[in-house]
Length: 260
Image (spheres, rainbow, N blue to C red):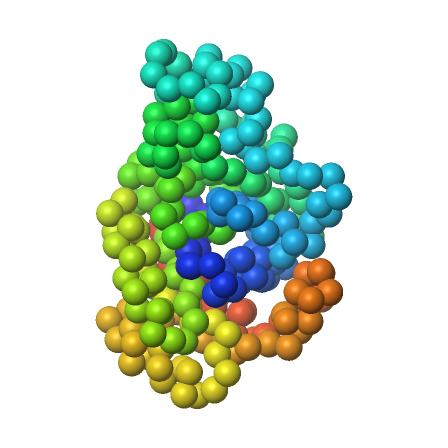
């Protein structure tokens, strides 16, 4: 199997930037086929990857005609009869955007019935995630919301790791604990912390002291290029090979976690 990584974290920690940098570094190896999944309700991964958004990207959950065709039921309906095993294998290639070897797929959210509803939209999203994790030979990097709602028990055991991005501070413990519990509840066994936007050695020590029972994947310093790129509305490190060495070290560690 190829590498399958879910990346979670509360808003504002830099999760999407970290996801985009990891995906782009992985794509430097031309042998790698990389799919980046934007499964956060606030969709920003396209910007991090430098994908043109002048033509809006329609999330999979809003492909109403396709969902009805594949499930036999109109999106927005609950109950009744519809296919629980819809065809989804063509969706990644038909509805993704690509740049520099990274293929972006935006999942979207289910607007009615809650994240656990049994409805046509959620059925397609779960089937698609199942296909991406279990049956595609691509590297899959998933930018998830804290609830990792698109991952079900059928796919979670095949996820190599759930990486929780945190910042230094008292709230890191509560956020990391919550996301770890949600990950464990669906069967993810390998859960790590990535500390981001550190300003000093004291910040690093604070993370270690606050989260002593977490395995730490790495530490990333606050970076002027990332701040400037965000202000200017562009992706950071246009030449990805100039990004911090720590990102490449993290990618190496993630690659070592790949399941046989």
